[in-house]
Length: 394
Image 1 (cartoon, rainbow, N blue to C red):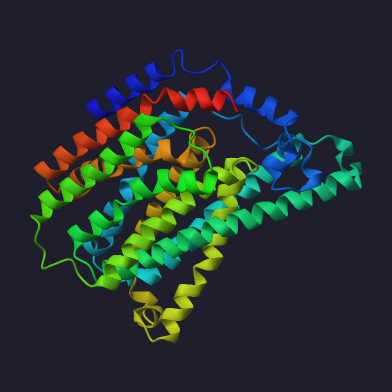
Image 2 (image 1 turned 60 degrees about the vertical axis):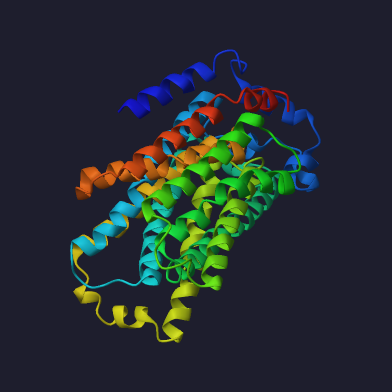
């Protein structure tokens, strides 16, 4: 656990003197006096503060140090994703195609999101006064318009997620593993560049840029070390383009998430995104069935799928797509996407640790070397005081 000890120390130290005592409280008070067009996409009736619409179910924003801690925990949980999916082949049973696995995982995710949404709705109703049913028509109209914008934003983010998944599956089938890791690591460079392009300002400093660049270099060097520069070539050109496009769309997802979190609470936005992902996942499954893919055979042999396989798919999506993404959304409400990106570089080291603990797979020297570089990249992001200063001055 030395990794967590070092990070916890840095996270605590980086919050001293860099931020006011309640930075997001200050931000919310200031946002009420600014033009609603900046935060509500130009809709005139959004002049009421957002918390009036969702005050009963919206938790208070976290501080910057706490948000960084959430990102570290999220990276540790995300590290279980590949390990649990590899467990599908370890337990035996019916071979499961990638499209089918993605569909099942997203349906489980929809169930988890529906349960959370139902629980929050019940909480809200219990807190409402007895005469709450007599609220004005204007308030109802504002809430309906807010819900409509919420689902549009959630569907947009879900579309980016599904597109990322499909492009990644297509590319991984045509490109060697070491090449795919190099191409996928371009995400560390896409996120800060897309932030400047889509957001129009950099809510981070030079240390975040250095952290993103170092995270990319760490992934590149580690992959070359593990693959030895071989692997039979770089694969097909279309496969390489698919992996770069996958990283690009995932970068757009992260930056657009930062934008949408200005007008929607993290939990409501993420929950709606999960439900939208479950609906959109029908598209690739139906396409695979129509083309006579492997999913058709799997659907005729569902009785061959072992209970352990169903449990692994449910557990993998619960940990990585439900718990970890919830932590990440809460953190990204106060931390820019670019500054949060170096924390994602901790996922491979954590994945190596989970592989050792759960699958008894040894940790290679390349993983240790890359993990050290990724830790330095995260430290650089943790010590970027420009993030706290610019968040407090908005």
